[in-house]
Image (cartoon, rainbow, N blue to C red; front, side, top):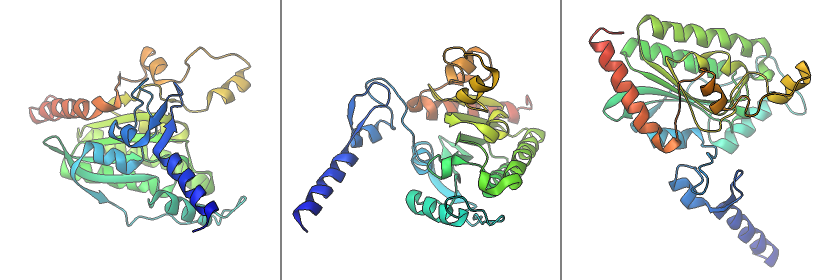
Length: 278
């Protein structure tokens, strides 16, 4: 290995060992940040978490489901590169097969189904596979009487699938309807960002809607809205705190408190269901 190669390797190691907080600009030691569930210890800024990290932070004895449902290229879409190439690149970079990962496992002493979206996979966009996996997760929860929790982050519909992507809004909403008919608890956790067609469908259909602090949540982005209506938006518009104030969500939960909060909510919901109150 030459001098230049050794220098590059040291620089890469520095990048992986240290990072800067996007909020308070503090320099953070990455291993310590990971131990703190990707929350800045200085200012409590919530860094992104990938789907597998989230699953491991919440579930024990878990197994992944519906990994055999894989994306294709129904429209032979191409922009600056083909959709097939974008899928291959995303799968390679994230080590995921799609933007939604479904797992079954134990949360406390309750078995649940957990759906987790990952923004690293094409912006967490919803295509046919995201819709189908969520639909299957709802059916499985209904058939096995298991609570469903969805942790959501998304930029919206996946444009490379056109109308097929938009159809998933109706499909996922119908699936939530099945849960409500059978009185199966469904809890959503909105994280940064939750936007577009996902926010306009299954994200806001939870029996209880939680959000992480500071998350951007809405349909169109604030810049698009300002340019459309030609008005300045209120301070904090489309943040989790703004939505809580306006009654659009039920609770803002710090990531380190999320597991205990979900355990309590699911315990209440399932006990009420078992005694016939739901």
